[in-house]
Every structure is written in C-alpha cells, then in structure tokens.
Amino acid sequence: MTTKLICQRILLKLSGEALMGKNGSIDADTLKRLAIEIKELCDVGVQVGLVIGGGNILRGAEKASDGLGRVTGDQMGMLATVINALAMQDAIEHLGQPVRVMSALKINQVCEDYIRRRAVRHLEKGRVVIFAAGTGNPFFTTDSAASLRAIEINAQLMIKATKVRGVFSADPEKVKDAKFYPRLTYDEALDQRLNVMDTTALVLCRENNMPMRVMDIFEPGAVMRLMMGEDIGSLIERGIINDQ
Image (cartoon, rainbow, N blue to C red; front, side, top):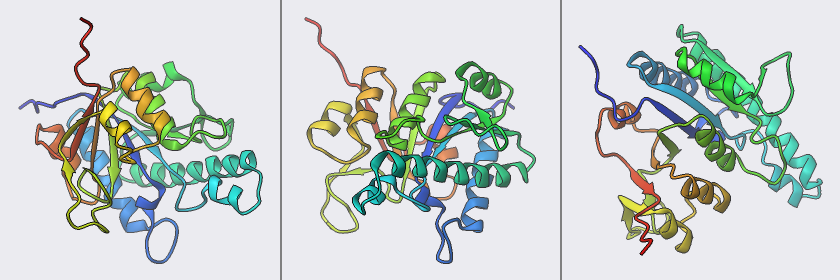
C-alpha cells in the first residue's frame, strides 16, 4: 500500500530551544522523540532537510549586546548550531536512519562541507540532511539560513516548528484573546510584524514562492499528520499577484 503524501521534500526548522530540557542545553528525551518522528517521516518516503538553531547554547546577538563583537558572537552562534546538529545526527543514526551534517563553515573532521548538489543527492538517496552553521555569514539568523536552504534544495514546503499551534496576532501565552491565523500571505505577515521569522527569511520565501507551515513541534505526530494531508497550524503563502 502506497502512502499518499502532500509533498516529498521538506525543510524542517527547529529552534535550539526546542532541544532544551530542565537539566541542560540538550535534553536526551526531547532529542530522541524528535529523531523518532523524523525517522518515521523518512520511512514513508519524505525527504527531510533540517536546520536547528543554537539558542539553547548561545545567541550571538545577545553576546554582542554584552560587549562581544557582533561578528565573533555570530560565529560562536554558528558553532553552537553545529553542536546541536551533531547531537541530532547521533540520535537519528541510533534509529538506523542514514543522516549527514553539512556545515556552511569548514569543519571537515566532524561533518561535510555544504555543497548544494551533494545535499540534494543525499536527500534523493533517502538520507536526512542537517544543515549547520547557518549561512556561514554573520548578521544572518538560522531562520534566514532555513529559508535559503529550503529554496536551494527545492523543498516543496518549509516547516517552522514552534511552541504554539501556529501564527497569532500576539503571543498567545501572554495575550489570551490573541487572534489565530490559519492562512495568511507573506505580505500580511510582514505588514503586521507578526514575528513569525525575521524579515530576511520571510522575504526570501515570498520572492521564491516557498510555502511555509508554522506549527507546534511538541504535538506528537503532528508533522506526519500534516504530510498525510491534515490541516495543521498556519499556512503562509505568497498570495495571488494581480498583474493587470
């Protein structure tokens, strides 16, 4: 029996905070749960690219505000994403799923250099590809890196994993009557400053017609149900352009 999927190739963006536990920067149980869900996606034929932030270990912008140079702080943040990527790689490999970490910074002894064609080939062979070190440049967030990699690998959908069920007009944990948006355009997200992702990431997706789904990563099995066609979270698209 063939499983019908809404798309074959996705880019999943996880925040570094998604890996955090009460006793440390990387929680083993959370890591294992996410690895299992990624493995299940691969088992039904989904090609998975993954970008993980480094905020559970270090935020370059925050270090810069503490007096450290912004470029140095961002470079340290890139290295933090490599640490998270290696941890996720290990968790996924323990389940028997092939996976590769590809870094925008040259760290040949621990992972591969990012080469777009090689990344696509890994995906075609059924390997999970974890894109580490952001874009390799300071002043760009891992949100921007995720948008860029999604476009480069021709993903059919980018998934922004959060702690809430989608996009709201305000933080729903602080504002009880915050409005939930099941559908919106990139222009609406930008105009209303909904803080879905940073501006560069949103514009990249808009200009390259990359649809984005914002959803709760802590809801078990949600990504799989999404792949099966269930309407989960918030969908952000470019919208209809009237050329007349």
